[in-house]
Image (cartoon, rainbow, N blue to C red):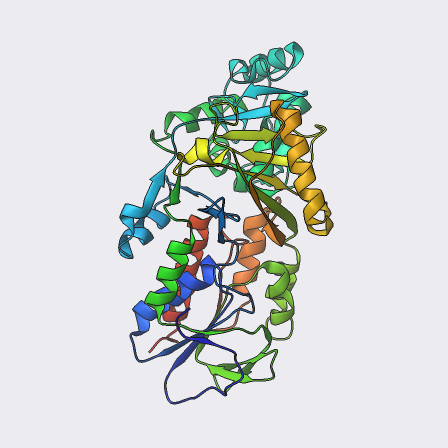
Length: 464
């Protein structure tokens, strides 16, 4: 990796220096944006103790093919990632899905993913007919006729709103599966404004019912592929950002920050001090708290309120003639007798490019630690058992990888935007934050938050 360092050699103060703490997509994008802003003369030093850069963007070879075992896709309707790929000369590496749709596993059988919904919230009774019982279908059909109590600007949990209007079956069978896939959370742990901001905006604007609000949103949705990926895996993007930012990678963790003479001094876990003119903290919220506690207590208190979930991914290569359905994968409803929360049939979703079929199973939900403390062998056994239960197939993997992601999935609880505003408001000049816990958990939002962090440093005149 360009500019890597053990962190044991002392820093030099011969030129302006900017430090980025965290080597995930947020930190790498911040380093790249800083380089564009400050030119070649400044030093950009990035701290991350991991064995490689990229954070939860991690590409492994499975069955001889590159496969992402962390984040695997981005929402194409947001402009950040396509624009960044084009800027880096990688526009031709963007991949679309095949158009295959996922299924939902509920009541011990497979169902089509409901159409005409927003994160599983239906626009009509027909949207979820067959997935929920007749009583729930009737309740949804009647919903537009019931008075709606909605306070403009409020941010209840998704479960609170959906259960009140449609009943618990819609929560557990339609909404929870999608939110578990995105956040490793549930409708109870995620606020409506984070999960479905356009629906909340429609309610603010006076929509008379929840089905009406969802219908308004669907009426403005742009057609085309929803998800994209990077051909060759996210490592292609990670390597390009590291190279173009000309960063110096210090393989050490930052333990403490000091505000000294209008600038900053970072102390890493080797005992080395690193002076900096500006700092971007691009680490997860739990790691942010001790770094901010002594210098920005208001921000530290806000970061402490952001809870996280842990997850694990089991990536498998299986024989190409394995009789999976022609679907992109399976999302699992709450309460099912499975260990996995989602199954991605990667070769069906993105197209097969090799002599094996690739798939991945995701484990772990908010409030559980099974995904982190369970052994590799047990996770692999769970994966094989779940495939047998869901598809009725005895799968014998040709290759496998297990990847754990402790505390990597922030929960966007009710009032999350207020918490983030408090966090940012408490930061002293010359210090900015980026990460998946701020403005969205996906890669596009992380890219956007990194750009905002650099802009905030420039705004206060830190950049020369």
